[in-house]
Image (cartoon, rainbow, N blue to C red; front, side, top):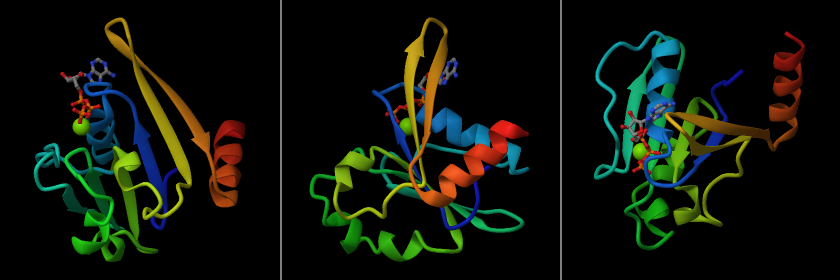
Length: 131
Ligand SMILES: Nc1ncnc2c1ncn2[C@@H]1O[C@H](COP(=O)(O)OP(=O)(O)OP(=O)(O)O)[C@@H](O)[C@H]1O
Ligand SMILES: [Mg+2]
């Protein structure tokens, strides 16, 4: 149900599985290259056949203004799908999410709470549930 132009917040403690989920999403889009955590670079871009997926990890940001200084606002736009780990680090400056996914450890697996937060997100989520 994800699509370009969307912003997805990925929430959850350290090790909750956010990066692993992004890797799975990339695999689902046919990307079979290396997917590494953007822990130090803050952003990894993946050019897919139909759009570019931007994977942010803002954990190491100290000031929300770094989001603007790094030019991330321009990379996360109507043509890109933006998946953001640790969105709270840029609270107030990030675009609003279409979908929020909250992950938590559940034994050897993970639980995901998925919530649509924009009108378009709600519409797609409804269609997805009916499908
Ligand atoms: N669904 C899952 N089932 C089992 N193990 C998982 C799952 N998702 C992630 N893991 C394992 O949990 C560990 C941490 O995963 P991951 O790096 O994706 O977490 P993260 O939420 O991105 O952490 P961080 O906040 O540090 O970036 C990895 O060893 C990974 O293999
Ligand atoms: Mg991670």
